[in-house]
Structure formats: structure tokens, C-alpha cells
Length: 299
Image (cartoon, rainbow, N blue to C red; front, side, top):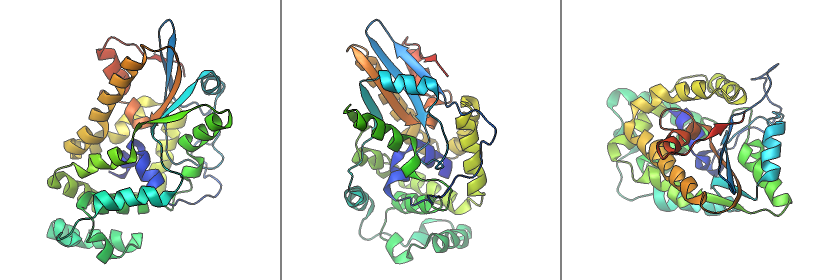
């Protein structure tokens, strides 16, 4: 379940994850790095669609000639969200939405046979249980999931969003967001409590090798292997249809509608969203196709 959040939300990677900023492990050694890139266009409008990974290794050279050309041709960068440079302001949104009085202890929100596993995850994360008990279930799960990513050999500092933002800012081109941070975290906050608890249980049950899973995901992304990216999430999406609906399908539909509306205005946009949104049967491209709009694969 961590993979869903990792790819689907910039908020997780940038809000509270503090990954190592050391040299990269070799997840794609000997492989040509060509993440997937699409184009939607008409006579006077072009929108490039690029799937990102929010945390990346330091030395992964992913800006291929085609991606570089698209970046240089674009007037505007459109991300999932644009965070305030002051991380305290983003953290304040998390507290505002995620903290609530009179909640049951966190351990009581999972079945009795899952409590030992959850306690183990909490101990590893180093977050006091007294703090987590004050969090709504989704906020506690998100906090624990992000803590589970902090030892990866990667960082948001090298993530695609950070690099792209710097490139556009350097030439004084605007950077905008499809959603606000409050909206992004609000998707979690609106989940039914049962779905939130499923999310929390999945964090407790996740005993996978985070580094190995991360390297597989980076390899698929680097190869532009959209089918493999979709397969990565298939089982986890089935685990919680509510989470899938809130984080992926509904947002993809919103973004496809945004693209359709934006096509009426001349110009060129580089749209960069989590790679999971551009893979699978409910992808942004699939929803565009349903509207009669074709996304052409460039890379």
C-alpha cells in the first residue's frame, strides 16, 4: 500500500519524508533511462503528459532529449500541487486536517491480531504513540508510511517535480498546481473510517523490502514500462477500492477534464503528475480517450 501513496501523492513525498541524500543505488544500471512521455495537441495547443516519481536517486539522469525538448517548448509547468517553500505551513495543514479530539487509541483501531505488527511499525518509525493517538486514522497511516520511506537511497530534492520546478523558475516561466495541498490531504480526510483503517492495517502488514520495491519501481519508470507500473499497483488497489477511487480514479477524471478545457486556449503546457496516474485502465490517457482526445506516446 505504500507504493500507492508514494506514486500517487506528491504530498507524501514532500510533506514529511526525509530520505537519505546519498549517491544512488544502481536500480537501472546499464539501462537507458527514458520515462514515458505523451503529447495531446491540436492546431494551437500542446500539452505534454509526463509521469513522475516524487523521490529519486541523486544521479539518475532522466531528462532525455525528447523530455528536454518538451520542457524548453513549454510555456507553463503544471504539477499536482505547489507547496509553500516553508515546510511548516504544509505541516500545519496536516495538523489542521489530521488531528482530532476524543479519538480511540491507534492500536484499538486495528484488529487485535494486527496490533503487534502495528506497534512494530510505530517503534521503527520513531513517532511517539501519544502523538499518533491524536491523529485521525488516515493521518497516522500516512505518517507511518512516509517514515517507512525515509531510509531509501533517494530524496524529494532530486525528484522530478523539484528538478522541473527549478528549470521553469530559472527561465521565469510559471509553475502552477492542479490541486492545493489542502485538497490533496482532503482526499484522505474524506475517506470512510473503514477505508482509513484498511489503509492503516496495510501499513502494519507491509513487511516488504522497501529498497527492493523502490528499485523495481524506478526500473519500470526509467524504462517507460507503463504496463509494469500499472501491475505494481493492481493488487493494492483491489485491497481498498475506496482509496483507489479517492486517490487515483476521481483525480484522473478531474485532470482529464482540465486538459479538455485547457485545449481551448492556445499555448504549450508541460503537465507532470505521479506516474501511477498515467498507467492502467483508469489512467488520464484512458479518460481522455473516452472524451475523444488522443494522447500520443512520444517516448
